[in-house]
Image (cartoon, rainbow, N blue to C red; front, side, top):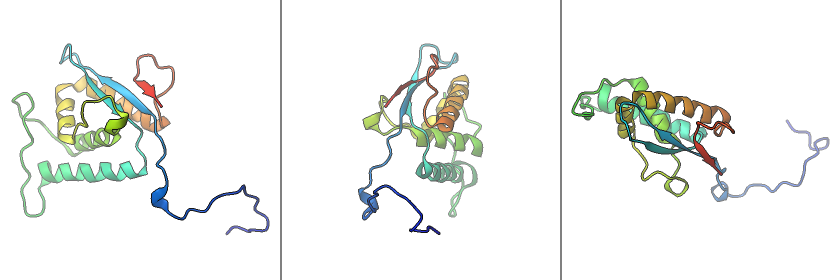
Length: 162
Protein backbone atom coordinates (compact mmCIF):
# COMPACT_ATOMS: atom_id res chain seq x y z
CA UNK A 1 0.00 0.00 0.00
CA UNK A 2 1.29 3.45 -0.88
CA UNK A 3 0.94 6.17 1.74
CA UNK A 4 0.22 9.29 -0.31
CA UNK A 5 1.26 11.62 2.49
CA UNK A 6 4.81 10.30 2.75
CA UNK A 7 5.47 9.37 -0.90
CA UNK A 8 7.26 11.94 -2.98
CA UNK A 9 6.86 11.60 -6.75
CA UNK A 10 7.64 13.64 -9.78
CA UNK A 11 4.79 14.77 -11.94
CA UNK A 12 3.53 11.68 -13.72
CA UNK A 13 0.81 11.61 -16.29
CA UNK A 14 -1.78 8.92 -15.69
CA UNK A 15 -2.31 6.52 -18.59
CA UNK A 16 -5.73 6.88 -20.17
CA UNK A 17 -5.21 4.66 -23.22
CA UNK A 18 -2.62 1.87 -23.09
CA UNK A 19 -3.11 1.27 -26.84
CA UNK A 20 -1.67 4.72 -27.51
CA UNK A 21 1.59 3.91 -25.70
CA UNK A 22 4.71 3.42 -27.80
CA UNK A 23 6.53 0.12 -27.51
CA UNK A 24 10.09 0.37 -26.19
CA UNK A 25 12.79 0.55 -28.84
CA UNK A 26 15.04 -2.51 -28.79
CA UNK A 27 18.48 -2.60 -30.32
CA UNK A 28 18.82 -4.70 -33.45
CA UNK A 29 21.87 -6.93 -33.92
CA UNK A 30 22.69 -7.96 -37.49
CA UNK A 31 24.11 -11.46 -37.21
CA UNK A 32 25.92 -13.33 -40.01
CA UNK A 33 25.42 -17.10 -39.82
CA UNK A 34 28.10 -19.11 -41.64
CA UNK A 35 29.16 -22.74 -41.50
CA UNK A 36 32.03 -24.76 -42.99
CA UNK A 37 29.43 -27.21 -44.35
CA UNK A 38 28.16 -24.38 -46.60
CA UNK A 39 31.31 -22.62 -47.88
CA UNK A 40 30.76 -19.20 -49.38
CA UNK A 41 27.21 -18.91 -47.97
CA UNK A 42 25.90 -16.54 -45.33
CA UNK A 43 22.49 -16.08 -43.75
CA UNK A 44 21.97 -12.66 -42.24
CA UNK A 45 19.56 -12.37 -39.34
CA UNK A 46 18.48 -9.13 -37.70
CA UNK A 47 17.70 -9.99 -34.08
CA UNK A 48 16.32 -8.23 -31.01
CA UNK A 49 16.12 -9.48 -27.45
CA UNK A 50 12.89 -11.21 -26.47
CA UNK A 51 10.41 -9.20 -24.46
CA UNK A 52 7.60 -10.67 -22.35
CA UNK A 53 5.21 -10.77 -25.32
CA UNK A 54 7.78 -12.61 -27.46
CA UNK A 55 8.21 -15.36 -24.86
CA UNK A 56 4.55 -16.27 -25.26
CA UNK A 57 4.97 -16.38 -29.03
CA UNK A 58 7.99 -18.70 -28.65
CA UNK A 59 5.96 -21.14 -26.54
CA UNK A 60 2.98 -21.04 -28.93
CA UNK A 61 5.14 -21.52 -32.04
CA UNK A 62 7.12 -24.41 -30.51
CA UNK A 63 3.86 -26.06 -29.48
CA UNK A 64 2.43 -25.61 -32.99
CA UNK A 65 5.51 -27.19 -34.57
CA UNK A 66 5.48 -30.07 -32.09
CA UNK A 67 1.81 -30.76 -32.81
CA UNK A 68 2.29 -30.45 -36.56
CA UNK A 69 5.40 -32.63 -36.93
CA UNK A 70 5.79 -34.78 -33.78
CA UNK A 71 2.60 -35.52 -31.86
CA UNK A 72 -0.31 -34.64 -34.12
CA UNK A 73 -3.37 -33.03 -32.65
CA UNK A 74 -7.05 -32.29 -33.08
CA UNK A 75 -7.58 -35.74 -34.56
CA UNK A 76 -4.80 -35.30 -37.11
CA UNK A 77 -1.61 -37.36 -37.16
CA UNK A 78 1.79 -35.67 -37.18
CA UNK A 79 2.97 -34.90 -40.71
CA UNK A 80 6.43 -35.46 -42.14
CA UNK A 81 8.88 -32.59 -41.80
CA UNK A 82 10.10 -31.26 -45.17
CA UNK A 83 13.27 -32.86 -46.49
CA UNK A 84 16.49 -30.86 -46.15
CA UNK A 85 18.97 -31.55 -48.93
CA UNK A 86 16.74 -34.43 -50.07
CA UNK A 87 17.16 -36.14 -46.68
CA UNK A 88 14.85 -36.71 -43.75
CA UNK A 89 15.48 -34.61 -40.67
CA UNK A 90 15.73 -35.87 -37.10
CA UNK A 91 13.45 -33.39 -35.35
CA UNK A 92 12.76 -32.82 -31.68
CA UNK A 93 10.72 -30.60 -29.45
CA UNK A 94 13.94 -28.90 -28.26
CA UNK A 95 14.93 -28.08 -31.85
CA UNK A 96 11.49 -26.55 -32.40
CA UNK A 97 11.90 -24.47 -29.22
CA UNK A 98 15.26 -23.16 -30.44
CA UNK A 99 13.94 -22.35 -33.91
CA UNK A 100 10.85 -20.68 -32.43
CA UNK A 101 13.12 -18.51 -30.26
CA UNK A 102 15.16 -17.35 -33.26
CA UNK A 103 11.93 -16.78 -35.21
CA UNK A 104 10.55 -14.56 -32.44
CA UNK A 105 13.81 -12.61 -32.12
CA UNK A 106 13.80 -11.47 -35.75
CA UNK A 107 13.33 -7.73 -36.09
CA UNK A 108 10.42 -6.52 -38.24
CA UNK A 109 11.30 -5.65 -41.86
CA UNK A 110 11.48 -1.90 -41.22
CA UNK A 111 14.28 -2.50 -38.67
CA UNK A 112 15.99 -5.32 -40.53
CA UNK A 113 18.65 -5.94 -43.13
CA UNK A 114 17.16 -9.36 -43.84
CA UNK A 115 15.50 -10.00 -47.17
CA UNK A 116 12.66 -11.73 -45.35
CA UNK A 117 11.48 -13.02 -42.00
CA UNK A 118 12.44 -16.70 -41.84
CA UNK A 119 9.69 -18.99 -40.53
CA UNK A 120 10.35 -21.73 -38.02
CA UNK A 121 10.50 -24.52 -40.63
CA UNK A 122 13.19 -22.64 -42.57
CA UNK A 123 15.14 -22.06 -39.36
CA UNK A 124 15.05 -25.80 -38.57
CA UNK A 125 16.48 -26.39 -42.07
CA UNK A 126 19.27 -23.89 -41.26
CA UNK A 127 19.98 -25.77 -38.01
CA UNK A 128 20.28 -29.05 -39.91
CA UNK A 129 22.30 -27.76 -42.88
CA UNK A 130 24.53 -25.38 -40.88
CA UNK A 131 25.08 -27.13 -37.52
CA UNK A 132 28.15 -25.15 -36.41
CA UNK A 133 26.61 -21.86 -37.50
CA UNK A 134 23.42 -22.81 -35.65
CA UNK A 135 25.39 -23.59 -32.49
CA UNK A 136 27.12 -20.21 -32.70
CA UNK A 137 23.81 -18.46 -33.44
CA UNK A 138 22.22 -19.94 -30.31
CA UNK A 139 25.12 -18.61 -28.24
CA UNK A 140 24.67 -15.15 -29.76
CA UNK A 141 20.92 -15.30 -29.08
CA UNK A 142 21.62 -16.15 -25.45
CA UNK A 143 24.00 -13.19 -25.22
CA UNK A 144 21.47 -10.82 -26.83
CA UNK A 145 18.71 -11.98 -24.46
CA UNK A 146 20.91 -11.90 -21.36
CA UNK A 147 22.15 -8.37 -21.92
CA UNK A 148 19.13 -6.99 -23.73
CA UNK A 149 21.52 -6.07 -26.55
CA UNK A 150 24.73 -7.40 -28.06
CA UNK A 151 27.81 -7.03 -25.85
CA UNK A 152 29.70 -3.89 -26.88
CA UNK A 153 33.20 -4.22 -28.26
CA UNK A 154 33.04 -7.83 -29.49
CA UNK A 155 34.71 -7.50 -32.87
CA UNK A 156 33.64 -10.95 -34.03
CA UNK A 157 30.00 -10.37 -33.12
CA UNK A 158 27.11 -8.86 -34.97
CA UNK A 159 26.73 -5.25 -36.06
CA UNK A 160 24.48 -3.41 -33.61
CA UNK A 161 22.42 -0.36 -34.48
CA UNK A 162 19.98 1.70 -32.49
